Length: 130
Image (cartoon, rainbow, N blue to C red; front, side, top):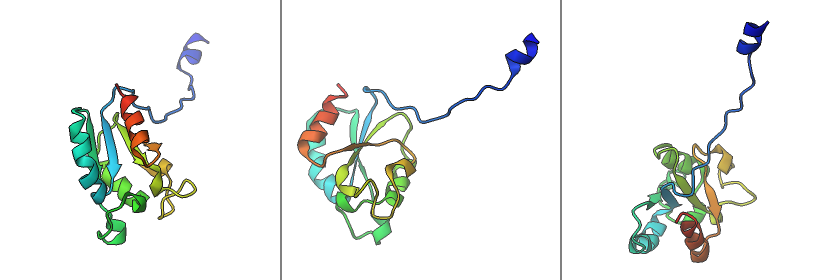
């Protein structure tokens, strides 16, 4: 009858919603990257772009390069970050689509955009937001 068809269960797919182009941007990097990228990001004059330091606790806290960022440390850093922002991740921390600890970008609590580890790719990703 009409009531049964109106209230029958309908399958629903629940997935992550990708942030829009105008969403605030977080650039994930190691502690050494903070030193290098900090002045550059500050110099572009955009308050919607910020750096997010990923502390290398997986390796005991004594590693600061972006190439050794692992999924576990990224999970920790991203879990404190808001939903609905864009997060840029340098490709240098992945090998065959995996981090050194075996996790993948799909294991992270926020969607990330994987970009080439160079200034041209970072600039292009930031320009896509304007």
